[in-house]
Image (cartoon, helix red, strand yellow):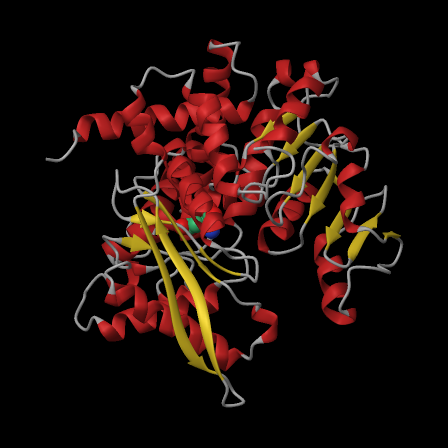
Length: 473
Ligand code: GLU
């Protein structure tokens, strides 16, 4: 891609893929198949707006790969939505799922609208009509393709989707599994909302616990005391900031569209969120300094930078000025390949999106399993575990003649709730994936960066899956 060519997110994913495929042994044809987007559904449909005007809505659903079923990936509402972007995001979903061993192919959807410019009723009509279009073309279903929230969408939209799907498929017993990220009352799972942010935290914490990686960058082991800059105070940015703060890091800056704020003593994301809700802006937060140009926050001196907004925010132009030692890609595609090369040369550790933000889809997988099994996690074992733990503890106390504190008693006896199981499943997933990718990188020192190592991991997993399936017919 020359510097003057328009930015293509899909091309940038292909570029990273090609860079990594050199470190694998798959034949070209198979690599081409892994890379290709299998099905691209581009649609237009009319929606009557509140003022009686008819608007033609542009929307997409892309299924990048069916090497495992169903396809999985969010739906975004944004004015920037285009086919190239949805294709890129769908590809990233395939690789992401493979790395974290979530048995789905990649998919993604997008509706080209600015949700802020529509009433709730208009948004509901658009979402329901989009879902109906997907049903008509067999592009949605618990065993076909399962959407989820993404930029500009959340629980509310997922509830509309499941309701539309279920009403068009009466009697389908697993209908709730047609979409994830639903409200709990509609078949959602506890822990889904914070999942991506928590996954980002678990992934970065694991990297920060790697002594060798920290020493190379002059950093101490652990997340405690590290300075963090977060771009984006949406669901992912908010929860990433929350978990870093709760574990002793200092979130020194938060950036949003309208600007950024800085406080060397650390910011509390909930207070900032409330301030923004009240005043309509992140700026003028008590005790913080305003940064008028939002993107300047990316260039602040800090240990960890978390871009949690949109793609292409750190590129060949601003990457040389970024001072962070670790960049955790909470968003999808925040760095361009040019930025990657600059950071590899600088020794900045870029922890890549395609696995770091996999917390969302991992917990979506848990939600889907819950929907198919029709039972809440913990329902069968919580009481049993509590009874057993109570018994073991009383035996220990009787035999030793000593008693534990009330706090310890509560901790030991506690049987798992749904949210405990979901968080622990996520923690295990993120730790395992981080170690696996780092091992691939260590085993092959000519791999230039962690993203390439993550791609190698993904390509090998998807490649094995395709090779074992054979080519049909
Ligand atoms: N939109 C999220 C992502 O990009 C979640 C996808 C899902 O849960 O299926 O990973």
